[in-house]
Amino acid sequence: MSAQNGVAPIIIKRKKVVSGGGHHGGAWKVAYADFVTAMMAFFMLMWLLSATTEKQRKGLADYFSPTIPISRISGGGSGAFNGDSMFTEDVMTKSGAGASDANPVDAQQARGETGLDQQARELAENEEFKTIEEALQGRGGESMVSIEMARHIVTRVTDEGLIIEMFATENAPLFEEGKETPTALLRDLMRMVARVTDVVSNNVAISGFIRSHPVVLANNPVWELSSSRADATRRLLESGGMKPARIHRVTGHADRNLSVSDPMAKRNNRVEIILLRQ
Image (tube, rainbow, N blue to C red; front, side, top):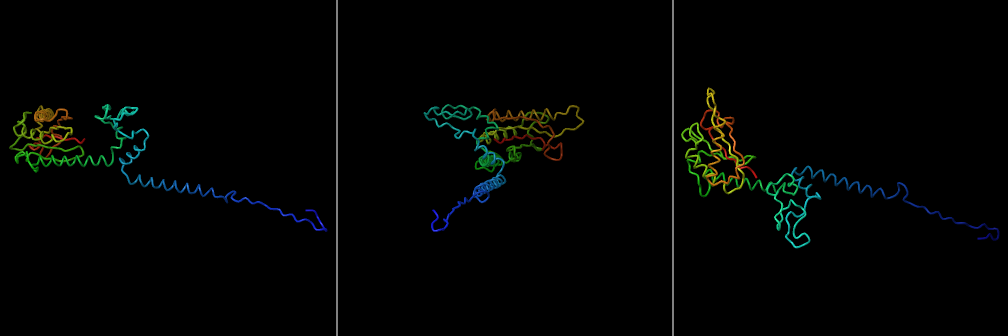
């Protein structure tokens, strides 16, 4: 505008102010929200780790592992793989591959068979052991054990499995004195045990124990005799119907694990049959 009548022109200058620069912006709020979210996730993770068992944590970790197959069993379809899986360790419904499932290794625990599943299997196994105990003690519906035979049987459940202990008394030995020849009582006991334990497929361990002999003996037979009696027990079980493949071990323990305080008591002459946990 040109000056007229001696009046100077009026100039208006508009200054544009840009807000949000430096620390006055809102970007820090986003970063802070991310930080709080991460901290919340971290504390939740710490709480979960403290509230679960080692087996449950392993199962969770294995579930999210990218190397684990989602489906362990082939669907038997007619797709590109003809129902088979690329994982050779699987048992295929169609091809039947994967023989290592018959002899599982520790690595197969990465398939989620831990935690609650294992606890359920242990509970079921304990119930089977309880049923066998009742049958051996003559408490079942149809008892196969006479009162006289039940007096020679003691059972107990341990971490190793169900231990069935059969012991001799002063008037009723299990073997002929100083020999591995079983008496009629032991033969009847072994036939009964073979029938009762046939309802499960657990492997079996057999242990032989004998009483101590006087130290004046020149040739102490405790080791040879306990081993021979354990092996004689194995033969009786197999003749009673137990599958030989179930026998896992046969051992003689001599007089190293006495049952009563008197080392020479006949009660220490005994055999143990252990139904090993699966």
